[in-house]
Image (cartoon, rainbow, N blue to C red; front, top):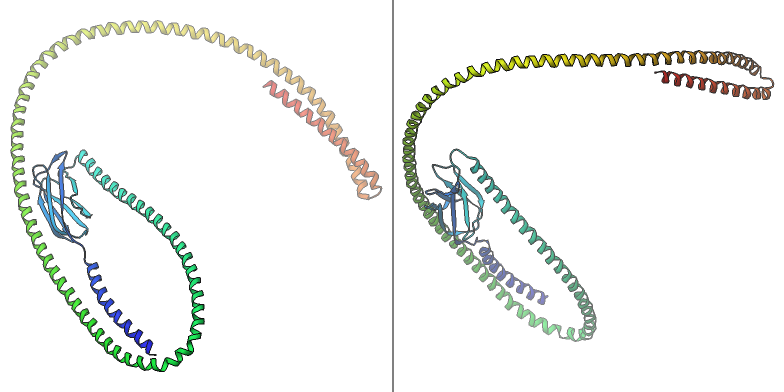
Length: 445
């Protein structure tokens, strides 16, 4: 019993110390690691850099970095503290459509490229936007492939660890068997010493009781110290969070100031660009008016030349009409000659066709006469078959009457077989005659 109390006090001490240690460790682990980073934004449109665009990097709707693009369409933005959170990069310019890139994880030193579209989109701009989307998809594909490679490495690692675990289990089994053997030997030794231990137990119990009282006092003190350290650790955590909050608020204010500054710079730059565009439009109009005047002068000159040309054209048409009339008359005469020649050829063809049809008619007449003679002959054969068929039916009727009476059936059965054979031959003769008729008709047609 004294031994168990000692073990309990030791466990209480270890648990208190471990709890305080875990509290501090967990607080450090849960804090997001933040660091200063710098990213570069490149902005262009139709292959040219865009100056004076406002760039905003926001996290949860709050700006953490802002700037304005320079003459080369470039802006470098430094963020004092960044914890790998998802951000949104937004590009704003009065002459172009806004662009943004959402759910982005920033990387120190990384370049982000944006291609802006004019207020009225062109085919090239749509193509550029499509390429940007494809690049995003390809980036995701690369990330997916990297993850796949990592998964494959992890699988290989786990497989190796599994094999090592199997080997270790085998070693543990051997060690366990050895431990069992040693335990059995020690149990035997313990049995021998049991008597000696019982003899000294009374004295040991007395000493243990004294030690227990001392250890219980020490255990209470240790627990109190552990609680005190736990409270101090919690207080330190609260103070650290307050400091972090103050720092974050300070950074947020700095980001807001930077955002306002960048916004003003962008507005100034864009005003200048709008002025340049207005001047360019004015020059373009002046050049356009000058071009219109030159166009009018050219059109007047063209009209005079056209008038002269039309006169010459009318005279030419009059001569061409005369030529056309003569050509038409010639064409009509040639057409009449061809028509007469065609009629003569058709008449000759009709003569030949008539002669051919006459010959065919003679053949048809001969074939019809031949078919008539054959059919008359087949009709005679049919009469013979019909007469024989009538005799066959009479014989069958007589035989049926005898069979109905039920006498001498064996003999009647033999007669029926003979009669059936006669009927079969008669059917074959009829079939052959029908086949002759078909062949004769087919040949005649």
